[in-house]
Amino acid sequence: MENTQTTTRSGTNRSIIIIGALFFIFGFVTWLNSVLIPYLKIACELNNFQSYFVVTAFYISYLVMALPSAWVLQKTGYKKGMSLGLLVMAVGAVIFIPAAYSRTYEIFLLGLFVQGTGLALLQTAANPYVVVLGPAESAAKRISIMGICNKVAGVLAPIVLGAILFSSADNIGETIEALSGVEKSAALDELAQRVIDPYLVMMAILIILAGLVYFSSLPEVDADAEDEELAKSNLNKTSIFQFPHIFLGTLALFLYVGVEVIAGDTIITYANESHGIPLVDAKFFASITLSAMIIGYVVGIFTIPRFITQENALKTSAILGLVFGLVAIYTDGFVSVLSIALLGLANALVWPAIWPMALAGLGRFTKIGSSFLIMAIAGGALIPPVYGYLADILDPQQAYWILIPCYLYILFFAVKGYKIKSL
Image 1 (tube, rainbow, N blue to C red):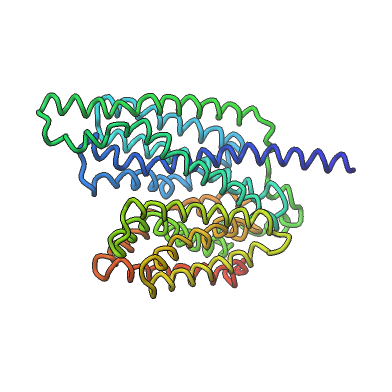
Image 2: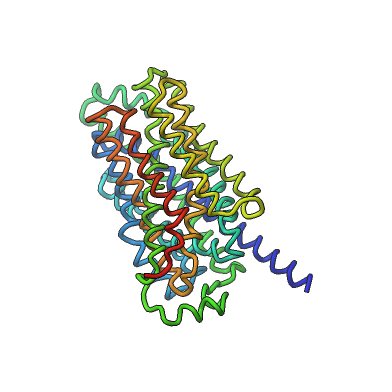
């Protein structure tokens, strides 16, 4: 009996290591956008508005492709679905090659959309897989481990790609207006083609990982088969719409992704323009946000479920978000900016807690439920512009009021919403 338990734990640990590598890939590819925006702005001669279509093309794929991803997973299962997602991402990387040679922004956007499509499939499979891989009460702990893998990749990605693409991009940006037609075109072509080698390497790595996942020892997990009582209770269920808590959780995740992006992407501008903190210093606040999230993940790993349930972790996170948000609004200077940075601590355990709470009891509807949660990532594309609009008509500090209703709803889901499991 003891040997069986040891073998099971060993298999689970191997699976977590493999999935952790996939979450590293999620983070690496996603955080490349912060480098691609200024890079493509120069190389393709874009204005600010056009350059941010990088984010739109990438994140819209989650909204468009999440439901088709669930259908694919119904046919392939989790493991083959993850392998397929990696191959689709490799195709997206290949598309960058003709985009670079032709210096065509629309082709770059197509490559980003295809990569996002692969990520949508990969995340639709990997996130619920982590949830059902072990005991439900410790799912948030496992997802916290995945979060650390994701954020470490987020730290490395801009450094690696930025070092390749931006070795002299500042000089090109400063002298671009002084160049004549042929010289200007040649300089921009050279800049655009810098992306080719790193994306060829990315393609090769993604193909290798796809093969490793496909031939790995990852077990195929069937949510209904794992729990006979759950399967029986779901016999009379004919539709995902009979589980209201998954939709309440989807809205909570949508709002969460929005406030996470606001916390990370507005803080440097807010510190510099609203409180006069020099950019050379303001840039470190973004690192504080990321570091605070990693600290939150570590806390989750060591406390869930031994000292705190994932439900209480979500309640605490929502309350912290409200506190830091209000402090940011009602204070000035360093304290206000630091409060936005500390939202990283408040946000860390929201994603890990919402996933198992929203997927609880879905059984054979887990894959389709996961696809709805993946669609919620679109909150990162839709809520930040609301902040920007409020910043224009009010001011950047008062615009942070958008955080308060978001955290209030997350608190509602943590207290009551996740319990509403039938109509």
